[in-house]
Image 1 (cartoon, rainbow, N blue to C red):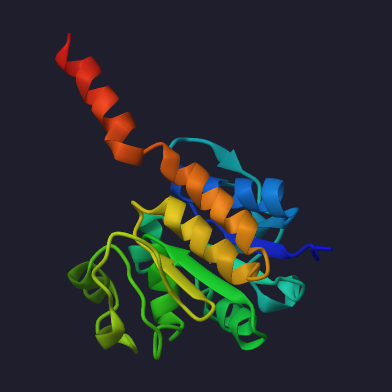
Image 2 (tube, helix red, strand yellow; image 1 turned 30 degrees about the vertical axis):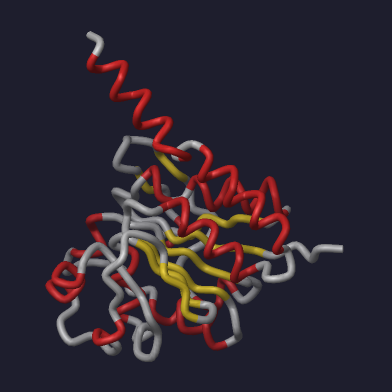
Length: 208
């Protein structure tokens, strides 16, 4: 019997709508995971698309001792000087063996927390991450790839890779559920098999 686990999703103002849905939806529906929205001081935040999300907790480690994993969702505000400090929360989850992930600008929070020190990782580009966090520990381990990168229980991804971010994150959180993970990967990939969806879209536009 699968043990239910809890993922904290870190959202700040201007969070990217497309970066968490694969992960939160699949985690809840396929794995009976409990998702918890974490925001600065637990207040509501508004996405890039204009949707308001209500935080259930703040970003302190004390509020989230029950988390098995934490995922930092991207926002342009992570690159601002006034970005929230989530390092204590991320480090506390990592130190107790939990899964920690960041996508798009959310990877800046992981870099600032020193979690890339001895881990392979990726982001929105080598120059991009160095431009925001110069000389962060582990910069030499950067991987210039378009998909999520996994090193032990640390997951990172560019903002264009929410699908592989979700799969890699859940594979790290539920290593015993290999069959479910394969089914999920197959489902996500079917849209792009043989370029079908993109070819169809191109065909439609060229016929106008």
